[in-house]
Length: 42
Image (tube, rainbow, N blue to C red):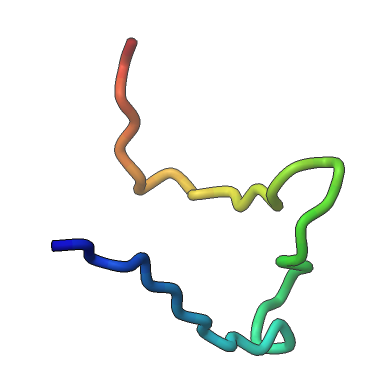
């Protein structure tokens, strides 16, 4: 049995964000997680 690939599209308005979420050459926008976020130690 051949199962075809599926694809879906979700619209997410970019105006709801406080920063630019569109792709760019500088990579993703970094957010300061603050002091309360645990970090892994490598």
